[in-house]
Image 1 (cartoon, helix red, strand yellow):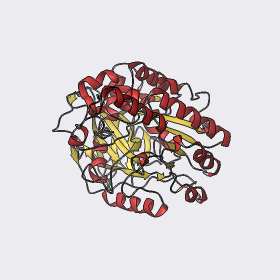
Image 2 (tube, rainbow, N blue to C red):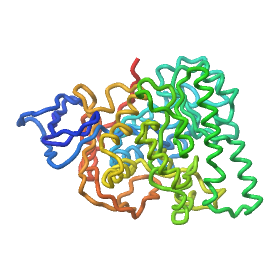
Image 3 (cartoon, helix red, strand yellow):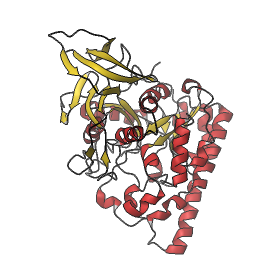
Length: 446
């Protein structure tokens, strides 16, 4: 592997921005500072550009195995890399669901063959395998999660089963990452709106069916039970301002037992966008009000929210454009999430240092991942280079998702990812991919 030297680049890392050089050797960051050029070193001129640690997206649905007509580990990891994401954590609701260590290992093996980015996976947990999960030593896992498993059958949401949470929180030693809504409340809301409007319901009612109350009461109960058992609870994809007040910012992330995240789309969209985009922005939990959007942003800046993720969940366009009750929930975001956050930076709403903290540092800290998430000597050279003054427009010509669409189509952004390094390999440069490399499994510190 040829050494690479990035010269005179603005490094965004660990709450500061400084101009320096970065030497990459044998897949690692060998040196940071003022470094002399050498004939045997490939040099990239970083003048005027910025480099951040590669983004670690802590929640995606890459649909592989089982739903590869929508997406797969190759296509979506490629899209991720074009968006500056060098590592991802995929949810267990593939087919078959990842409910045991055998299936988990099979998924890691599949990713080692197909993924251009680094990869990690959660082990699924629900009522069907709870007894097996609590017998396992889960300390070496990234997390166990029920996310997406409610699509398999009703009653699979942990947040809806307090007796199940009691047992899981009392025995499971890993992070427990949950989808937090009261399912029975959502079902009652569906019945109510059907009685008023019939089956021809508008998607604008989605945030009232998957309501603030359904989210808040589920999260409040889960946190109470987690504290009772001193469990490690992570609430996935927070969507309401009300829920943000349930979280603490008095401790550093390394000391927190109760954590949460916000998805990029919940910072970008609000209920006013349903009129324009319809079911294309139908997610579970739902995108809610402008008040919620602003409240989530405020909580993010105040460190009540720990991570920024995308919940990347691609479906074919025809699956999304169906009537409300038939339309699939979820949308593709992994190629564009980092760019959206950079747009907020350009608007003066968030600092680059805070973006690096929430999208790069904190996922690595929360999931205890070995040598990633920071620009440090001896760490893996997962790096994303950004031109802060290079406008471009999202279009079908540059969307890399297998499903071929994005709810951001037509949006013009003012920053562009120019280079992405994965494990020291320049996998993406000015729109060109080098696909001879494969990502590595994310390792948990023991």
